[in-house]
Image (cartoon, rainbow over all chains, first blue to last red; front, side):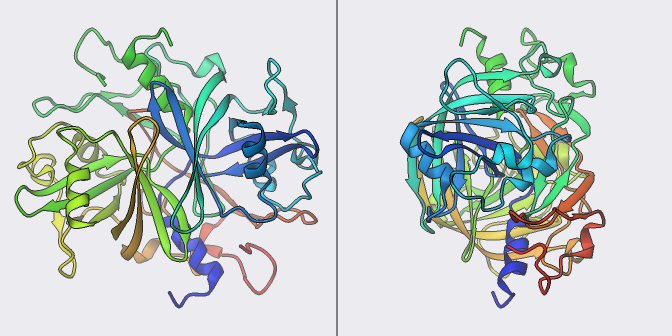
Length: 216
Length: 216
């Protein structure tokens, strides 16, 4: 607790382990498009498909928060190894009327009249609707959303539903500013009390749901 | 929406990107120790140090949920590349009176009378107190906790507060059952509107907080 603020933030941000790297795209009719990197996206459920993410206590900037509250929608776009620096640069404090897309050099992609831009260079994109905006004990917000559409490059999609995010150049974040590759180790079969785990080394072999492996 | 349930679960679980791999240790005075892998731990704040994680809607099993509600405490233990299979196996449905530590072959470590076991083989462990138990729209719970103590192997601790989780054998999860290594790409300096990003290839060089880089 006696550490200097920045050192402390780096340390505590490391303690949660590896994180997703996601660009959130939003739009405001007055101020235009916004794009912001977050490392706090978590899976909440499959039926309906739900995800959540954490935002700092909304202050005067909080462009992502304000835009989502106003429009009720956003996009998630996975960061891959070709766009790490552009993605990281979105965290600079640009004025609200500035488009991070232009500033960092990413391409907005508008899909089917969805009023929030996705990222052309991202290989896993989706559109979401806000469900709840929950205030946490420290003033942060936990935003829960439903996935309404997705666009996943087909090369990453395995027969059994698994998406090979490593094949799609996916990266993971540690701490505030560490970026890591994601080489495959193995997939493991659904754990049962009376069965040995099976390893799958080739991720797109997939589990056979007609046997009892990989059951969820 | 027409995909078979397991295929669908695999797919949607992949869409949130890479996830932390954490073993949660809890204790019940009647049923003993419990250990359970989760992939939903997220950072919530540094002051005080706060984290959150998602649990399924509490059903008749829900041993982790019941134990935390009763004792108010738990431990987080990062999964590393030497204990992936043991960690995964904790997700099997063992009876409540069975200790997952014994079943999967991990060693409970009891620290300073903290009434929840940590995992000896883990290289980043911490003890946490429950702050809030929040019910989400789909019945899942978002549990928020404060970090009360930690134990990080010193080889991973960098001068500027960053923890080199890759150096400590850290792994990341994709989908329901994919495990990935985490080789370092680079750390990036704090983003500013008027500055080029700097790359740090050797993660423990650290940022100099007396210059304006790596500022948070």
